[in-house]
Image 1: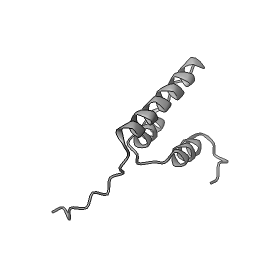
Image 2: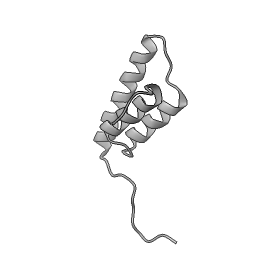
Image 3: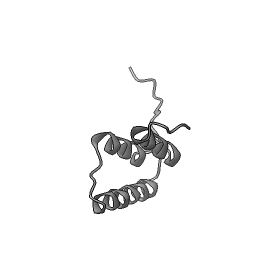
Length: 72
């Protein structure tokens, strides 16, 4: 039974579109350099676009995947 509380992140359609464009640009840049993003990064991208992650969280989580020396 739902308690009626919606705990999903609330971002505007404009913010979501802005985030989608940023991710699409970054993905294209990476592909231009000859790489393809893995499923783990694409999941982080999805969460960022949907508003589940802030920009800082998105960057930090992505760096954690690829940089074993990364610390917040």
